[in-house]
Length: 261
Ligand code: MG
Image (cartoon, rainbow, N blue to C red; front, side):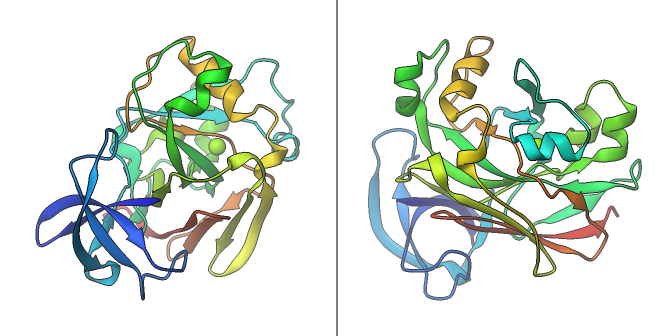
């Protein structure tokens, strides 16, 4: 099931996306969910066309945990070794935007990069998750763009500003709950030109490894998000660009880059 979060006439709701297609809303319909998708829920049968709503970030995470350098070719392209222990960082909730929202180019950077990533959405509160239980705590998967101020990342020892500025975490367009994430094509385009193309099977640490590693340290809550790292091909965005992240079996997350007003 594809679960979207959206607003219509000033109300916010979750809905199950029905119909064929991955990115183009034409022909897609939302069946409004009664309640929230983290527990048992029912579909209301009340349907609205996707073209009539504004998509919101598909979840409102309590936290977004990023993982750095989880694809060998990407680590190499920035002159980095693959780390012995996974590098984890946090992106604040104020960085999260949905598909169709604008990425605001921050004033402190002149080198903002896209990073297409598979995002894991947590479905239940969990801590110290054993490897064999990892699939039980996952609600589903969505597309993410781990937008990064690369110059600030080089200059500053911690990445809080470089990866945490407002609008630096596009998520969407929805959460796909029925998906084997182990070998999916992941692509980034800028203005329609392909910049990244990888497969999730190239991850150095698997989703199981990452959930075990993160929950050794912290409790994850329903709606929390893990960004699993980006394949090779990262590069700059400029004001006016349209950047799109497409993951096989999920859909396309599209955002324009604007100057911060
Ligand atoms: Mg990243």
